[in-house]
Length: 369
Image (tube, rainbow, N blue to C red; front, top):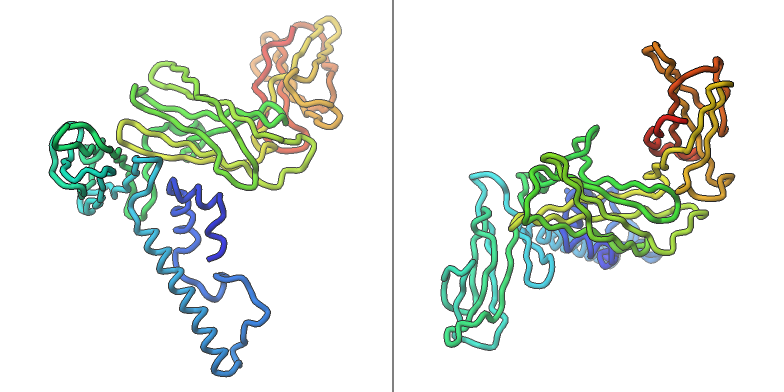
């Protein structure tokens, strides 16, 4: 199929996302609704002569071969993460068989032997490893029988999957409000700079993260190394990302695709998020002031918000609590001031949100003074 060579799909294939996409979109051949080949003006109709029928059958045969090749790819239980690092899919139940992985010693020497984590395995240039559980994964090294030096090595990682072929993800903790959100990204403005966060419980000293964008028409996105903050048993990791050549005044047509890979010793998981900048906007709180003598609340746009304000307007919420009252009053406005009905002592807080898109509200400001 001509579109398989799209770079974005190739990048997804390297990390298993392409296989997930194919399982969702090509679970069964549907020649009535799915176009497998680009249309051609000379394609014969159903009433064409015998030669046209042969061409049609040839197209169908090619389509069948394409589907069979895709099926073979879907059955593949391993992929190359990087040089000499393989991820092995293991169905996480007792009845499922182990995956067979063939490793070849990358050396001109013939007299070699294999070790797994310093334990002797066998002689010969080729080793077939049965990988099912975590003790089967790890570092496999090929050594010279004469010098006992390491000639090449392969690191095998395990990705746990269920009987439907879906990856089981246990390393990260989901965010509150959604059991399916493990990777969350937010932007304070339309500069193209945003942060992505994820969480773990009981921080492991061996866990490693790689965050990047899937290459594609959305352009290049670079991300910093994550910074960890631990509170109790919960550790939050945050990376700052930047979409290059982002124009805040232009309409977005292609989403940004962020891909997070997690390795804990020999366990591998990946997570992804796809979004437009406009959908992940969360401004900083407004800067406010409350004058109790006349009941006037005034505020300014957050300093981190995009300018000009006329092009990037915000809408606001004003929350008011009077002394000895248990209820809050909340006012909505697009202005930058509000006259309360009754002056006098009160606690006042402010929130802001992009006026043009239903993205997230800011956190509440500190009490206005």
